Image (cartoon, rainbow, N blue to C red):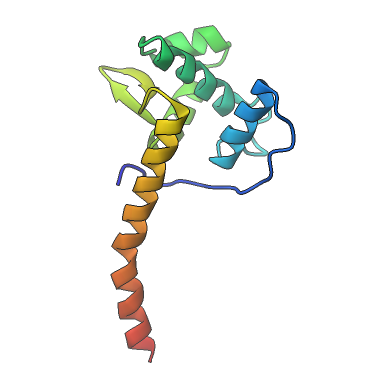
Amino acid sequence: MTFKELTLKKEKLTKKELNQELQWFSESLGLTSLRDKSKSCFRIFIELLKTTKMQKPASSDELAFKLNLTRGTVVHHLNKLMDSGLVVSQKNKYLLRTTSLKKLTEELKKDTEEFFEFILPIAEEIDKALS
């Protein structure tokens, strides 16, 4: 299991333009919040998608410079992305954990299945104790 915390949102995709699909994908994985007015986390995710495709990990400083964000903001969101199992760190540089969104989705699915297998026996124990 790779994630510490993963938020999933099930919403219908209404428009089929690439940028809107990317935003929908990002929102489905809980990468947006009302507090993140400038969509910093989404922008970092998209930049990491690009750098991963080019096989060129980016440092927090490089991401901050490229996206015109503070390093603190970038580090905050990178930690969130790593906790959700989407991003990995290699020698203080970051990239998506896999090279495609399809593979990323498949790995997240596997992670969530492992998570539910992990908590299932505990749920059964609690049910027995409550009976």
